[in-house]
Length: 435
Image (cartoon, rainbow, N blue to C red; front, side):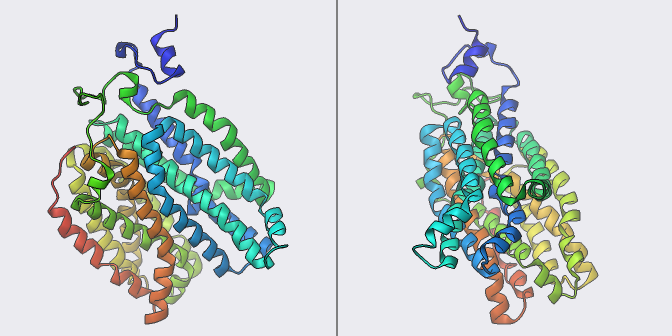
C-alpha cells in the first residue's frame, strides 16, 4: 500500500493530513517561482535580445516590429480572462503543464518563423508575411508566458497561503526581481552561442519536456484537494468543501477591483512606455544614452530588497497600506521622470522607479485573494492580468502620441500624475480586510 506522502505525488486525492510534509506549501512556492521563470521569454525583457536579430533577418522596420508586438500583446490580453476561467475549471496543476508546453511550442515555432514567413510570402507580400508570422508567435508567447503562467503562479500563492501569504510573496518578489534583471543577459548569452533561432529552439524544447514533468509531479491545485486547510487557518470551507470567495462578475463590480487595476495598470503603462522610448527621452532631457540605459540598475538595487521587505510585512500592514505606499511612490516617480534633465530629478527617478516597482509584485499577488477570496481566484486573476497586459501594450503608443501632440515626452509623465492622486483618494475609502 502506498504511503500518504506517495499518494500526494501520485494524484490530487485527499489523504490523512497528519502525514503531509509540513513544508509542502513552500514546495508550491518553488513551483510558482519555476513557472514565473518559464514565462520570462514571454516578458518584454525576454524578447528584447531577439529584437535586433529579427529586424536584420526579416527586413522589417522597427515600427513594423513594434506593431506586431503591440497587436500580439493586445490579443493575448483579450483572451486572458477566459484563460483565468480555465484555471478555475481544470485546476492550476493541469493548466500550468499546458502553459509551459504552450510557451515551449511557441518558442519552437518562433525558431522556425523564417520558413513560415517564406511560405506565407507566396500568398501575401514579404513584409506582410513576416508581420503575420511574428504576430502569431508573439500572441502565443505573451498569452502563455506573460499572461497565463503569471495567473497560475499568483493563483497558487493565493490558494496555498493565508497567514504566511506575505512571506511567500516576499520570496516570490525577490526571485522575480533577480529573474527580470538577469533574463536579458542570460538569453543574450544563449543567442551569442547558439544564434537567435537556436536559442528559441533549445529553450522551447526544455520548456516542452522538462518543465511539464516537474509541474505534474509537484504542483497541487489547493490545500483542499489534498485534504488539508490553508496554512494556520481553521477550516474555512463551506458545506460543499469549497473555500470562500466571490465570482469574477461580483469582483468587477467593486471599488476594490477597479482601484487596484487603475493603480497597477498605470504603473505598467508608464514603465513600459518609458522603457520603450528611453533613449529618445534621455536625449530630449540632455542625458546621454549610456546614462539613460543605466538608470534601471540602481533602481533594481532598490526594488528587489524593498519588494522583499514590503511583502514580508504586508501580513501586518494589509493591502490598503501597501496600495497607499505605491500611490505615493508613483507620485514621486512620475514627477521626477518629468525632470530627468536635472540631477535631483535623475536621482529621485531612480528612487521612485525602485519603490513603485517594489510594490507591483505584492499588489499583483496579495490584493485579489485578500479582497475576493480563493474560490474563483483564477478567473479574477485572469481578468486583472488582462488589464495589465493592455496597459503594457498601450504604454509606447501613449508616449508617442503625447510627444507628437505636445512636442515633448515630459508631458506623458506629468499627465499621469492624476492617476496616483485618484488612487490615493479611492484607496482611503477601501476596507482593509482579508476575505
